[in-house]
Image 1: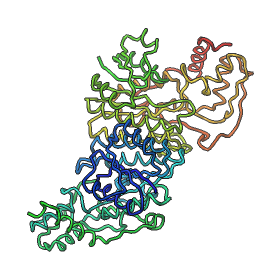
Image 2 (image 1 turned 180 degrees about the vertical axis):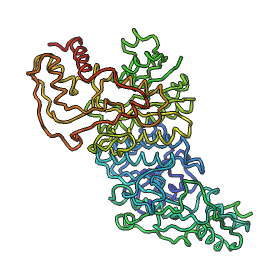
Image 3 (image 1 turned 90 degrees about the vertical axis):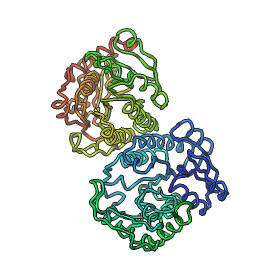
Image 4 (image 1 turned 120 degrees about the vertical axis):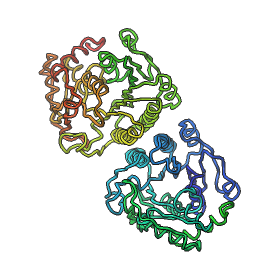
Length: 308
Length: 308
């Protein structure tokens, strides 16, 4: 049975990645600083949970030295809502990732897939292409992710390591932080309260988190090398997303679309070229935006305490 | 009295940096994984020696938290002759540097100067200019240094940290590893043995290590921000360096200059634009190449065990 270590296993993408990998027949070593959540303990027989603090190089060494995984899906990073763009925790996440990468390669690892971000690209120059769009991050988060990408690119060949780097764009879906755009619109709509989308004209590429997780699982199982955008390939106006949520919740009248102009690091459009994902990885999403939003609304509706 | 922490204090540049900083009136906290060498213990009253393993984030935290330095000159890096270009130790050096940088900023640090390298640049496109020449390293060493540079650039402003990054080119002088070009030529010449310079036509920018160290001390004391090349500004043929060494040693006839063509990562010329160093830092070297080589030959001549 193929085995894989997944870091950040309790995170937004991580928890869905476990399911996607389990469907593909992997035996999974889930790594997190948190204890195993109830859903992992109860319903996933192929998942073994390991608590570890990746910032501690001795813990990383012990963990990887014990498991000696052939594959690694590295999703762990500091992602505190709002704070993550400029937090010094980005330095700690980068440092921990370097230790993890090295331990993995030196203990016989064969395939490494890491999570990158659209924030590595220079924004505002059209659709982001993996190798043609310049990398020029405007945030510490983007800089630190780019640094890991570049060191990985230089290091992997010397160890004969197969690797890929999935650049994530905009996500939504079950488990998203409730203060982010999609959840806050859904919660207001479900409670028949006014829901405001201030920057209705910004265009962003959204992908449901279960699709993102499934794409990572597909990328891990492929032999594709280098950076691969993980996105839908279509940018949608935030206003359209808000209107769809209002419609699905039966609260269309409660949606207010602003046409504000945000700060300099929010260009009108952030979208992805997805030829590599479609053709080389051979992956496409399981659901449309409308379907994904409907499923997400149902998830929030069923969550205790959301309906007031 | 101004105080400064110097990492890599027992290294090739580090040991000379202590002297340069002492001349400028700094009180110095020298950090190394080695115990204090005899010369530091005996002759440098303004130097306090701290043994620390920078790869251990708890040691870094304790060290910086105790000293709480205002200035930091970060020279420590893995530099094992020959191995350093592609060694995985570059990941550890980068990881340690990130922990150090963060601890320094969070404990009230004010001025950070790090050691970069000409290997960050894309070689072969003429004289390397700090902001105009693309950064495109061909080695893991260059990639890891560039990664630290870019994270530093993104992180420092958010902490109000003043910073500079001295990109070092080619060094020579007392204390250089004996298997490198200049020492091996000198040792052979001093012993009247044949001395071969295989790639006589390559042009490189050489600077005496005491000048490099002095330039770092000047850069630390300045308010100059960002990357600054630390070099002479003139590329010299390796064959000319070899002939000068032969002449100084009185062994001109023993020098053999080859015109071999080395591998792809050795372009015909690597040279530096030095306008920032000269005009903004206001620094220039104390010695010519001829003077520097003469002093270096004398150092080797006096070193026990060199003359056979």
